[in-house]
Amino acid sequence: MLRSEIRELSDKNGELKTQLQDLTEKLRQAEQGKDHAHEQFSVLGKPHKAGPFGTVKGLRTNPTVTPDESVNPRLAKILEGVAVRKELIVVLANSNVKPMLEVQVTTIKKAGITNYLVVALDNQIEEFCKANDVPVYRRDPDEGIDSIAKTGGNHAVSGLKFRILREFLQLGYGVLLSDVDIVYLQNPFNHLYQDSDVESMTDGHNNMTAYGYNDVFDEPSMGWARYAHTMRIWVYNSGFFYIRPTLPSIELLDRVAGRLSREKAWDQAVFNEELYFPSHPGYDGLHAAKRTMDFYMFMNSKVLFKTVRKDANLKKLKPVILHVNYHPDKLPRMKAIVEFYINGKQDALEPFPDDIVKRERERDGFQVATLSFGWSFLALIKHLRPEAQSSLSLLLLLGFAGLQWLLSLLNLLEASIECFLVRLSTKHEIWIKEKMEIHCPTSVEK
Image (cartoon, rainbow, N blue to C red; front, side, top):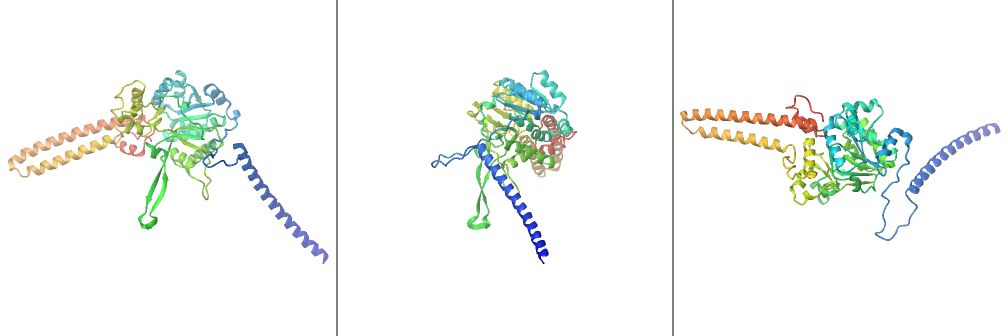
């Protein structure tokens, strides 16, 4: 009897030991999480008492990471010679965008910017940079990256930057990432706040779209509660942003690069989703500080061609940079911007429409007007005598056929020009591709 009781107590003791071990492990994990939170708080600052009403300001700037040169010693040596105050402009380029890169390099030198580095994705760009005394970095061979770098379209290449930039941040450098379709008029580092993890230009075109606004959704079926307030803001442009070497910044790059490797997605959409989507059940959001650049200083091409060039006062402004992101005919517009802002040619921007479809609307309108005229004329000759009808009908048919032939010739010429311009561009919307494919002998890559 005593032996069986001893056995039962021994079994219970074993169960209690197992439970104790489980509880000890849970406690250890809880303490570890608490310590980690305390360490993070200690890094950001000592505990503070809240001051009087209206005087309290939260911490906005995360600490930078400790530089780790072992990540890429060769790149570390290059950056040491190029960067100014541990900051530099970085541009990714392959031979498909060489004409635009040439324009950009010219404006970089004109603006007196020295901390500028081209990440060459092929031999042609590397040779161009060396021949023109432009700092260049060619990555070590990487089959996964190199295949996209050499043959990928603009969006595929654009997605690579989130993987490549990681090493720059790990080495402790702040990077101003730039697309090639950007004209530089001033040194951008003189106009950055540098108080956030990410400081980006906007695709917005006025105060509301660039900086956010309260958009009211109306659902009449809800009666008294029909109005729901929503917040809206136009996206950051992933082709021009400054990113500090902080842990949230590196986490952002990892998140975006990871999603782009798994999903067929546009890098700019993923970039904004990771920056803005808040934590919610099943998802931990990114805790990164962000700032929107002044949209008149860091100007997109919609602001320039739809607003600024038509306003006498705004035309006097000298932006820091101009990004031709809204238009597919990038190279001619970049050259026109150089002529206007650098060479002083006041009418250099005038030949360009606000948008690429304006000419198509004008052409379609002309076709409709021509058809309407033809039908009206046919209705008119019905009331004439038979002998007069035959003569006028023949004249009408000949004139109408000639007009349509001339219109077709003009359309073909315009389509050929647009095909040439679009081939030079590297970032245009899908609707351009669909429209141009009916005229182009080869497909146009997005």
